[in-house]
Length: 363
Image (cartoon, rainbow, N blue to C red; front, top):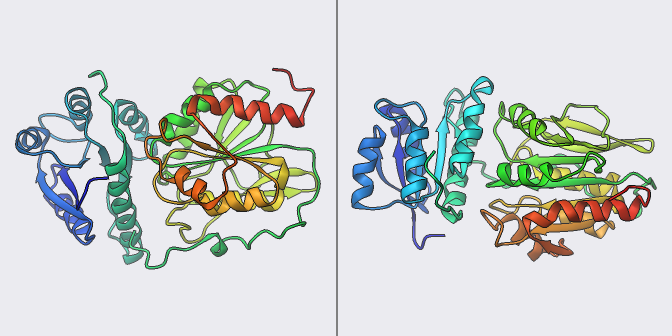
């Protein structure tokens, strides 16, 4: 994290958008807008004079598009870049291209239609900037103002010791944020088709998660899909929480199913890892494995501790392999993590834990 204020360069061809972004960021005492630029050429001239801690970049601009500029930055002088775009579901393939090119986060253009919408997107933008400033970016080949930080109590009551009903079904719960899209790809791609059921909260805006799930599904042996309210949770499948909605684990009899709920942001996020983990503590207990991965902030730390207290196994991604060692660090500090592992060992940890409860599952 830079000492002093996080210095930001905004690159967008819309003067009104530049002004809105500058106003939102300037309201945070820990952020300074170093400069704004109307296109990548103007931005490049500014970069010759001084370097920001974070760049906020539009994708559709004249003379040079944002994707090309992103690749040039990552190839020549890596700086944390946040894509601020009006991308929709139909255009979301561009989002994954941006992550692959080196962007650390993507946020939608600020919505000013209601005060609440502006407050939420303002908080999201400021959190993204601070997160990006901590991110580790490596060279690549060129090619919400919510006044109160709510806990999971806003969505689901705390779990009670001894209330978990017995079941033989094991389930994996994963939480991730900044850097998580690529990290999840690495983990899920390595899992065999006979893996345990997996429920995932990845901090993403509404409209992106369905395409994210389809993209993972196309490269994985397991089935990956956006979660739907009321659907059963099955082995060999991973379920991604829909953007801007909370996902909970429930149980009907001895089988698990998914509940999708609206509600306020928890730990400043919706979907929230804390909400998912708490529901897993309640309904799965010792039959759950909680995994917390790269991301800024403390979402998931309290929920993971609740899981561990009710007998769940817990793992955290190590600092070296994280883009941002925030969420795992907080979970460790809260006492909820029993083992810290590198990213490439997480698939092995999942399968070893699953096989321990299901001896008939092969290799």
